[in-house]
Amino acid sequence: MSEAENKAIRHLWPHFSAPPTEHPIIIERGEGCYVWDQHGKRYLDALAGLFVVQVGHGRQELANAAGKQAETMAYYPIWGYTHRPAIDMAAKLAELAPGDLNRVFFTTGGSEAVESAWKLARQYHQLRGEPERRKVIARKTTYHGTTLGALSITGIPALREAFEPLIDGVTHVAKTDQLHCSMCHRSCNLMCADEFAAAIEQEGPETVAAVYLEPVQNSGGCFTPPPGYMARVREICDRYGVLMVSDEVICAFGRVGGWFGAERYDYVPDMLTFAKGSTSGYSPLGGVIVRDAIAEPFIEHGEAFNHGITFAGHPVSCAVGLANLQIMESERLPDHVLANEAAFRAALEPLLEHPMAVEVRGAGYFFAVELVKDKDTMQSFSQDESNRLVKLLKTAMADRGMLARADNRGAPILQYSPPLIAGPDEFAVIADVSSEILDVGAAAMGIGT
Ligand SMILES: Cc1ncc(COP(=O)(O)O)c(C=O)c1O
Image (cartoon, rainbow, N blue to C red; front, top):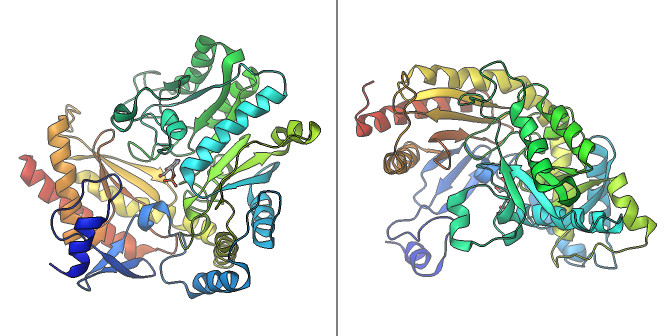
């Protein structure tokens, strides 16, 4: 084993995975849609790192933007002072965001953005004389981050268990799972959207601060909203005076086509959380984009939002973010995604001929394939079986030079989110490797092909 591998095993605590005991994959270099490991092996980065690297790896422009800003002024806080990169990035985000989402509260990542929006909602209601409005309604199987506030909004029991009791006052309602939905008996009446209203009534509308949802829900595998769903949720939030938070930590910056998921699905949330793709991962940056009306009571009362983070709105990250958005604009990446969405889906759909693959769903450059044990009966895998299957699929795809997601936080899925510069060549690799690994998975699970 190499020195770096030994050090990784001895000293590095990896996230959401047991420490490796042998030969970790060490990613050393990236270019375009591909990355290379310590042995020079090439992988198609079919998850854009972690839904992050929109413009692809190895972009000199972004490295230059970081270096130039670090040389000029590497750090100053946005507590009391401000600096040009934060001002310019905030103005650019306000220009791109839909409606009157005009004011940006920066963070360093997604969990902090989700948590900041909850605190902002609470202080907003307090300033307006409704201090009892503290609760949140979110959706089942949803991932909104890991800090204790964000984790309380996260709806994945396995991630919460070790840390219970979490912050009180979060209720989880149905997600938009059209494949398994038994609510509307196949003619969609948006009963899943109406669950938000029922939960608000149940909790007491005067106690509910905010509703959180992603435009396309990641966990469980790229659940898109049925037509009319977002408009219904918007209407419910307005009816009860509850703030609508669009968690776009994944869905913003072209991932689902359009600059933001809210743009793609035609709604204006009260707050929009972002991170990941804002800088394509060349430096960390997240935040909350807030509607004028939500900032208004703070301005009217001359009140600070009593919340801050040392590295939020970091000058280097904001400079990189601006350069990243410039690339996305000049290469028209949100339009490129929309133009290629159908081709991506078409490349994946032949996988449905496989006995385990039951649905291809998603939008833009964000798709999942759901797997079942028996397509005729829709029988799913047991927990042990699905753990085994997902592990096997992950290894098999890495062996074949592709990094994507095999996951079972809901039903087992394969999930893809390539850099937004990808096109038909990358779709073909994704389809070929997926087809091969499904065969490997089926053979190991004793499912006939
Ligand atoms: C929808 C959503 N919200 C929040 C987060 C948390 O972001 P971070 O990992 O940057 O804290 C994630 C991370 O994947 C996410 O997908």
